[in-house]
Length: 468
Image (cartoon, rainbow, N blue to C red; front, side, top):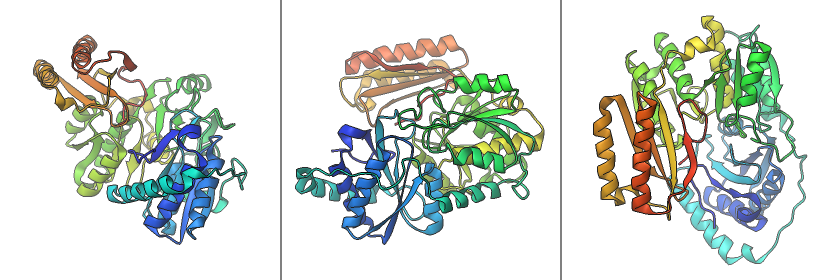
């Protein structure tokens, strides 16, 4: 049975999320949260309407009203949940392939549920699914069009985003040329609308979802076409959302990628100079590049480091009273305006900064000098705790000693897969490569298998480096 991971329940839509399981999940959520109603929104995956219908059936069976928001980005659903004071369920698998799907439940404050509440839902789900619903089969016809959206929900979200711009928000981006890649995902309608309403001239790509093309060679994990489009059109910048709209990767006027670390660096510096960076710090995960730390500390900005995962970033922000935090992947949180990462909000902040400072995005991004970073995912025989191995610990300490202050080492086991992730940063690419290969060999020797997982992500390459 699927369990809550770092971002809800997620897996193959057909095999891991059959109707009987989703109905039981809806019943479990209703019993633990005991709300009068639950908002339900989704992205553009073909399985979305089926899963929404099954989830709604489970909620209805417990006399909880399910209010459909249709297709909306995850941060839009979180915003509506917070403003209406109603919990929500989001049917999405974010940046995953179209055949995956998932259900993420958020509270009436628009934030992820506490671990204890998720554990209670899991316990209720195990009883419910194991005792009753696995003996039945449920088939549903979707009750809403595949890509319908609640106009009131979308309208309030758009108005909110525009209100975050300097001035009246009506012409904040006037005259700015932007190429927007919607990843054929949840932001395919609301994304272009926000930027155009802000005054920008927008050229849209990958905004024709068919249920199967979400994240397919497009969006924040595949920005190649966007890079070419920005250069060909002479645009000021490009923005690439992911499938559920909580991430964004930018492209500068030269077609070069600007990832979450560079976005946070230039944003933090600007906010700090204007006195808007509360407590003079931001929160980032351990995966953020050493170049970010160097750039910000040279400006007197503190960096609060967290484990991988936006849950940890948000928790650190709340604990320290911070207004900015995020991850290299482009999942960035502006806590004054949002409870979660928001690709469109981040895109607006980037575009507004370009226009207000009258500086090209390439110049703003150059405030951070990236340190070569190598990430190697090593397949192992089973999920492991890396501290099980004395030999690996010794090898890590040796590499750390050799790199000194000129680099970083991070070795951790995946929380969801039989992988050990090795990350090395060093001022020279060759040094980083050699150190990563050295530790990879130790991992193979200690934990077996030996086939690399997704291989290596070099510095500047977008990817899923922030995944647990």
